[in-house]
Every structure is written in C-alpha cells, then in structure tokens.
Length: 458
Ligand SMILES: *[C@@H]1O[C@H](CO)[C@@H](O)[C@H](O)[C@H]1NC(C)=O
Ligand SMILES: *[C@@H]1O[C@H](CO)[C@@H](O)[C@H](O)[C@H]1NC(C)=O
Image (tube, rainbow, N blue to C red; front, side, top):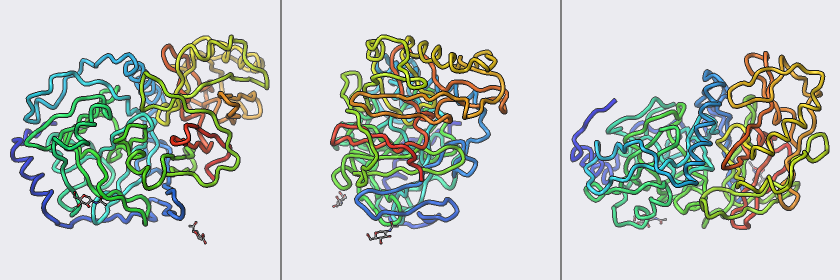
C-alpha cells in the first residue's frame, strides 16, 4: 500500500507538526480500566501490566493466530538472530530510497531480529497530553518506535488511533547532526539517513517486518505518574510486517538508544518482568528492583557477537533431578541468550538430544506422536501435569529455573498432541518465553547479573 506522498509535502507537515501545539484525539486515559492498566509508580521502578500476545483479554490479542504460524515465526526470529551474529546483511531492498529523498543509503538492511508473534504487550503513553498505546516489548531490540501519522507510506491496523505528532505539543523531529542520529547504526544495525535535515531511522526485523520513519523525541509516560521528557524513538512512516495490532515496539536491549538505557539515569539500569500465561496478567517494571528476596542470580556476560543482547551461561539441565547425559562442554559450545520474544527455548543440538532422550525415558507410558513444526518430542493426547517430570535449567553461579509442567510441555491441536517445548539450535541457545512464564526475571544490567524467582506474576 503505497500512497506516494511527495517527500517535501510530508516533511513540511512534520515541520509544521513539530512547531504547533494542537491537541485533538487524546485518551484513552493512561490507567484505563478498560485495558486494566495498573498504575503503580510508588517506588523508583514502575510497574506496567504485561499481557501474553494470545491472551484473549490482551489489548492487542492475536489469539486467532494458529500456533503453527507462531512457531514458524519463532523459527524466523531465531534465524535472524543467527544472521545478526554472522553479520550477514539481508538482501531485502530498503524502502528508504523509494520513499524518502535520501542519497547516501545503499547498504542492504541488516536484520535486527524478528519481531515475530511471540512478544508480550504493554501500554505506554506518548506525547503531551499523553495518549496510551499498545506496544510490544522486546529484549532483542534497542530502538523503540511507533506508527505515526501521516503514515506517509504505510501503517498496519492497530488498536486505537495512530499517534499524531500534531496533537502533541512536546513532539520534535531530530536533526541529522544530533548524536542520537549518529547512534542509530549501532541501535538498529542499519545506517541512518538524512532527509531535509531530519534524521531517518530504519528498523528491520528478520521476518521481513520493518519500520522506517523520523527519529523523534517526545514525552514518554509510564503509568499515570511518571513522565520522561525528550524520549528518543522512531515516528514510523512506513511500517510493514506482523506486529499484531500493536502501535509499535519498546526496545529493552542494552544499546544506549533503548528505552532501558534512556531511563537508566532516572530509574536505574535494570528492569524486571513476569511473563504471564494466556490466562493471567504479568508486569514489566523499569528500574532497579527493590524487592530482591527469593532471586537466584547468574552473571550477565558480554559477547563480542552483539553487545545489546543478554548473554548468560547455562551450566546444565536436569530431568527428574538428574543432570542429562551430555558433556559439560556442549552447553558452552554456542552462546546462550535470554530473550523475551522467542517462544520456544533453543538448545545446542547435543544438549537438546540429551534432554529429549532423558525426558522420553520418563514418559514410557505415553504414545509418541509425529513431530509438530519445530517440536519433535511429542506425545498423543493430553499429558497430565502430574505426569511431567521435573526439568530444571541451572545457570552459571547456581541460578535455577525449576520449570513448572506448563513451562515444559505445550498442548497443541486442541489437546490432540502434547510436545516438549524445546527445540535444537545450531548457532545460539535461547532461553525462550514459554520457559520464563510466571517466573520473575530481573535484568540487573548495572550489576551485570540476571535473577530468577518463582511465582512472579502474583
Ligand atoms: C505506595 O506507598 C505508600 C507508602 O509507602 C503505601 O501506603 C501505598 O500502599 C503504596 N501504593 C501502592 C499502590 O503500592
Ligand atoms: C527537552 O528538550 C528541550 C528542547 O531541546 C529542552 O528545552 C528541554 O530542556 C529538554 N528537557 C529536559 C528535561 O531535558
């Protein structure tokens, strides 16, 4: 869908927008009871309600998307992470040259990671007066962006109205010489561009979703009491791909343009979350966590592969209390990250094979079923949670996730099939969100450690 607005026209609108205070279409209110947003900003950290993307009560539910689609997008996300590590640019042509008057950009886009369909959603406010938007939350991305009027090229369907910079009297477009503009390459892994001295960002994702638009600043509101002026984000004029019905994306990776890094001086360089199931709600809390009781910690390690992602070390996995039969060196033979947007945990292939074997040995009474998508340790029918063996992920330093049956197996095809929710990987192990569900996870970036605690969504 290309509208082909002449660029100078789009820009003059933007410049006009930047200078005019014109409030219209405000609301829904930030702490809307309709969206059940908790507005508790009592401490140095902030609690936002987090929804599973397939929770029918999520403000941007994708509960109608079949699980097979979710799994194939999950595989695209994992592939794009692998590509990102190998620094191979994607061959997809940029939309920039077609739609913006840019001369310098000829590099192909590098996939920043797939947005996929596994990302949890929350709500944040942008602009003055603040309007609330549904955003996906992604620990695998840095730059935050949202769809933005006039949607010069394309906006996908979203819940609520598309952000209109015109209705915010604190909106500003960022110029090309600003440091935020020169930082874009490390934040998006793509070059920035310049059009009539407005900085243009390009965020691209491995599932060929992307957002291109004006790098901007405006006031970000989290909950009802916290407002952060001059938050840097992308005002997306060309937004294509599968983002559910969300308005955009919040980047929680470690690059300095991420929401986390921008808010760190005010709230602390840390965040925590509890990823809920499809039936409950959880939270995202930005800032230092001041109730660390019950957490066990593992070091966050740095990797030359990518300085924005969260690397850790998996020490071993146990099934029914016994470490699985694989040499310890197998765990470290490829890097391991923790990721909020990958649905199924990926393990180095020997580790996966050993896990599958050990798990199968505990399921002797159950009939094997054929593989389903990326899942190959499957059983016919439903499996009672009491029949699921204990599985624990133990990290360097002893931090342990004692998984619940719901973190171990997923029920598919209306209960006709139940599969072990792990899959093999070749270049990166990923602790995915099915396994993290209902754990409290704290990313203490300043303290270079990551903590887990059970029963976190209450
Ligand atoms: C906020 O803190 C005050 C005092 O510490 C406490 O009484 C109140 O219950 C807290 N509110 C919330 C929503 O946690
Ligand atoms: C935000 O940016 C504006 C314009 O550059 C500036 O006047 C203002 O002081 C900034 N506010 C804060 C809190 O940094």
